[in-house]
Amino acid sequence: MKLLTSAMLRGACKGQRRKFREMFPDGAPVTVRAAMRARRVGLDVLWCARLLPAPLYEQYLAARIRLLVSMLRKA
Image 1 (spheres, helix red, strand yellow):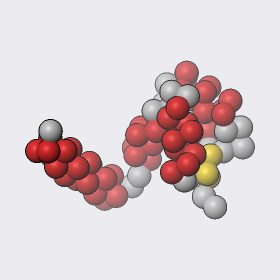
Image 2 (cartoon, one colour):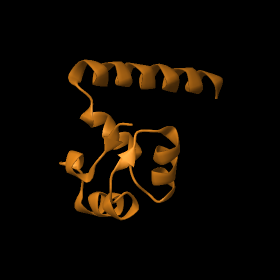
Image 3 (cartoon, helix red, strand yellow):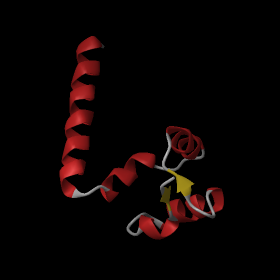
Image 4 (cartoon, one colour):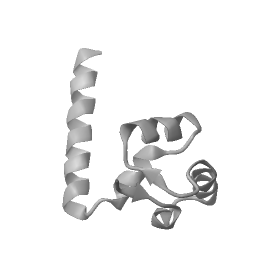
């Protein structure tokens, strides 16, 4: 299983890196469950999208925008 490690979080703020290391000393599995657990303790899990290669990051942003527009139309 692919792991997200603290070394991969270059550019994240010091407090977020510290929280990550405390919660996932050996790295975090790239799963929804781990992301939700991290979110509950205040980690900015959406920041990790910045780790995607440029073409995938653009796809991620487009999907987020589509979801936002859809939700705003329903509100």
